[in-house]
Image (cartoon, rainbow, N blue to C red; front, top):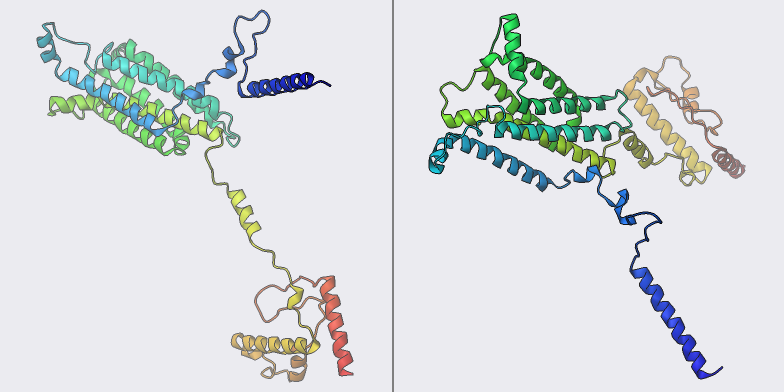
Length: 389
């Protein structure tokens, strides 16, 4: 074979090796199927899922609170300085910034928060219903929370509670609170309270969720008190606006509570949350305790040692028995069979029958010696007899 043929073959092999390394380093995108207008990168697997939009980091929730609190504070300041701003701009009175009005900025912001809470609650339902140990189907309460928030979101902009309150007041001839608000506050409070008690056991699993839920409960309580007319008299305009904005903060904290619980569920589904398992803990504890087995190396090597150990054990037993019941000690009993009792206390046993511990309050032992143990004891006894002979 000529030198040129060898060089050509070596060059071809080196080119094939370089081509294979390039193919492994640079992944190729599969060409579109015949008749398809998109590549495989446009498939569903390559796009984010709904749970991917739930924030995972706590600073995201801090930013969410900051943005929501900033918007509510801006609405309070705008309502407080609305006349001055209108005078500076040279326009008429600004009425769209009132927090307690319908079709205003405050109502629109409340509607957005409640709508977001409804969507996240439905997402929680889709995850929560797959829990294995929920035998009573408590996950269905999240459907009720989602539907209630959706209806309240619609009512924030539609204002359906006003004609309802007036109609009920006209039909019954009885009213309470300001502007007949008792007819819509009472049913809404009852429904929301029932839902709150049902979802509280789930929210307890996440500290952030339960804290935000308690904050939302406090804000809603202040809102009911303000609508009832029990507070607000004699307060400054700034204090009254802060009390009026409690409902907005309640919606914000409720959205934060449901979103943080959704984050907890997503992490729990992925296996990133550890739960203490009582059965597994007890099983681990049982496995950590060593089995108490009789060690044959601890047995005496001669019959003399066996007899000495038996006498020592009999003496200790008699001493213990004398402390508990002096009348039961051999020699002190009135039966007169002292020698027989002493011989029984030092009598050698081969382990074929269980020994009755009548000197103790514990139940008698039922454990028998194993076959190997009995065989070794018989050998020791036979050696002792041979030495005695």
